[in-house]
Amino acid sequence: MFLRSLALLFLLSFYSSAAESDAVAISANIQAQHLPYGAVLDPIFAAADSDKIVGYTRCGDSAIWTGHYLAAESFRYKVTKSSLALANVKSALAALQLLVDVTGNDVLARCAIPVDSPFAPGIVQEESHNGIHIGAVNLISYNWIGNTSRDQYSGVFFGLGVAYDMVDDVAVRGAASSLITRLLNNLLGHAWSVVISGFDISTTFLLRPDQQLSLLATAQHVNGGSFRGQYRIFAANSAPLATTPIALEATDPTGSYFKFNLDAINLFQLLRLDDNWFRSYYSGKAYDAFRGAVSTHQNAHFNMIDHALRGKDSVRDAETVMLLNDWLLRPRRDLTVDLRGKYKTCHDDNTACSPIPVALRPPTDFLWQRSPFQLSGGGSGLIESAGIDYILPYWMARYYRVLSE
Image (cartoon, rainbow, N blue to C red; front, side, top):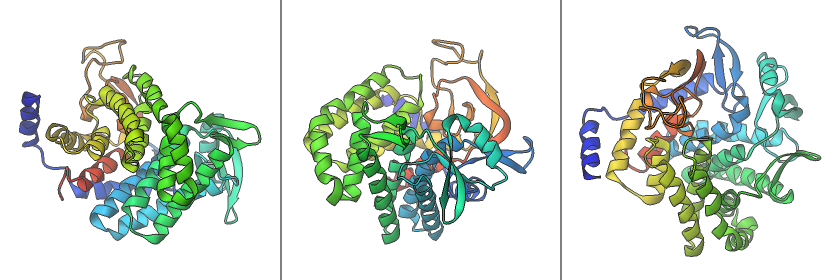
C-alpha cells in the first residue's frame, strides 16, 4: 500500500489538475446539444466528422442520466453559487417533473418527446420494445416511453435527494420534495411495483430491500411528516436483509456492471441520511460488499462515493484526480475501440484481467457504469455522449475538497 501510494502521488505530480473550465464547457455543451426537450438525450450526427444533428438516441435511459445530471449541477451550485448552475438545476427539475406529469398517474416515464418533433419517429422506433404511450402536459402532446425500470427510479431519487441538500433555494427544495413524494406514494400504493397502467407492471422493488430502504430514506429526509414513521418501521424489519442482494452481485465483478452504479447511488443516499446505529450497521455491511468488489476498478465516480461516505484517503483521492484527467483524453463520440489481443484476457476474449486505462476504454453513455475490463465496443462515431460521467465526480471532488479550484 505504501509503495502504491508513493507511485500514485509521483504520477500525479506530472498531471495538471482537472480544470473547472473543462467541467463548465461540458455543461454548456449538454445544454446546447443534449437537452432538446429538457431531459438528457444523446445526439446522432450526420457523419463522424459532421456537427449536424439528425436524430437523438438513448431515450430509454433519459430519466436516470437526467437524475445524475441534476446531482452534478447541484454539487456545482453548492461549490460555486453560479447562476448558470442554478438555472441548470431548475431546468433538470422541470424535465423530471415532465416525466412524472406526462404519465398522468405519478409513475415515472423513461423519456418524453413531443409528438410533432422531427426526431420523434426515430426515437419511437428505437424504443418501441419499451412501449410507446401518449400523454399531454400544458396542451402539448408527448410520446412517452414506458417499461420503466428500477434503474430510472434510483437515478431520479439520487438527483432529487442531492438537489434538496445542495441547493439553498426554496423553489428547488420544494420541487424535489414534491416529486419524491409523488413517486414514492405511487410505488407504495402499488406494493412497490411500477404499474404503467392497468395490469401493465414493468418492474418491482419487492426483492430489493436495499433499494426500498434507500428510496424511503430519501423520502423521509425531504418529507419526514409523511414518511418518517414508515421508514423506521420498514427499516427495523428489513435492514438486515439489505446486504444479501449486494453481496450476491459482488460475486460477479464484471457481468451486468451497471448494477454497481445503482448500488453506489442507493447506498450513498441510505448511508448519509441515516445515523441510527442499527440500520447503519447493516447498510455499512452492504456497502462493504459493494466496495470490496469495485475498489480496484479505477472508477472515479465510485471513488467519490467512497470519499463521501468514508472520508479522506490519500491514495484513493490521488487516483481519482488521475482518472478525471484521463477522462478528458477520451473521445466524446462512439468511435469503435478494439483492444483484443493487446491485453491479457480472463474469462473470455473481450474481458481483460486488469482494468483498461480510462483514456482507452470503449465509449459509452456513462463510463463508470461499464466494466473497466471490457476490451471492445463503440460504434461509428455518430453518437456523442453527454459527459455527465466527468462533471458528476468532478463537482463532487470539488465539494469534498479532493480538488481545489
